[in-house]
Length: 455
Image (cartoon, rainbow, N blue to C red; front, side):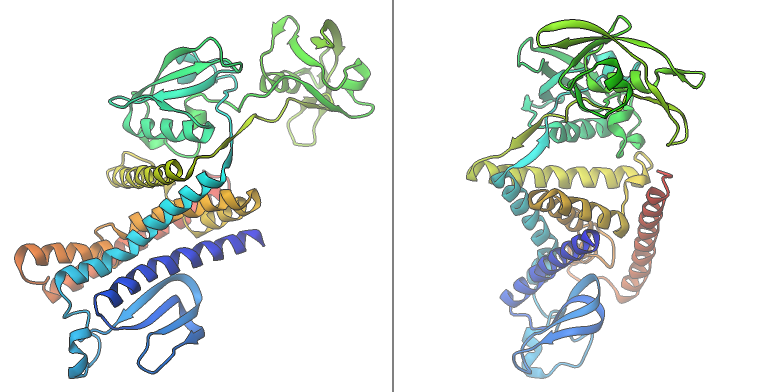
């Protein structure tokens, strides 16, 4: 239910804001608006104060909306209303009316990002788990427990890293550009700072997708190698382990984090039997050795080792919050960065330098909407902002059928002094429909492939 609710709220808010931008500027420019519609198809609700006023309607299919303006090209117009038609409005007025929808979405995104920063977002702290062996991250010198404090991209100043989300955003942008990124890291106690270089120059931009972090070698977030709640009668209880024990090593090999400890437990079997392990644990300031033999668990298919105890602590989290002015500036900054990144990704996908897997459709949007609703109102605000940026940027693309296509016509008219010929408009419309259908097909395929685990 949360997925459907999240999707409906997302579509409803973003469509209303987009169309309201068109509507408000059209009214300000003196153009008569006949209908303001949210959705398509059969009308579920309508309101019109007077016969001459704008008709507001809600339709059955909430997959878009439109603002219908008085236009001689679509209907006969009485002579006393000719001055209020869209087609007779000045080039500047028509441009402003068309651009207002996407700009309203971008303005909403900036406000939503700012609101999320004002309230405060709970984010995972940028404390890294063990890097994947042989990966770019390991070659850079990253170690389990490293806390990334700042990032520097070529030609830019040092930028503080607020959270793991912020770090991945910076690394993703660098991956698209194939840059060498300088990281400033410290240990978890904020001591022993050092800088290192994460070289993404040889990375294929087409692999920059949801799995990008794993591809460059960033493993799970850091967790302390602590023993938590112990299940009665399991290997951990039989071995004498206690909740709160810190595991320092297994069979003489030191352990620095919970992920490595879990992997040693999972692989602690041989020939269908658990292999005895010698655990070095710290308890109440004392070190002692404990013999632990994992049991074999075949419930998930392939056999794995289990000790029937909670292993590791949750990843550390940090509250990212800013004051009124800084929060507003951060909202604008993030809207700009996200818009530029979206355009870069679309451009690289067009020339084959980025994966088409990054295109998402309504199924993925519904999934993310539901997840963000479950995570709380602040996370949903952030999700709304991201989708609002995407909608604004998409509508500014110079494709017929989109606002950007109409703006392209007006640029032609401004340069040549005459509108685009009708025969060319018809051809461009057909081409635009074909491109949009292709993009929608790819996005829907990606949605289905994600559901089936193919991506």
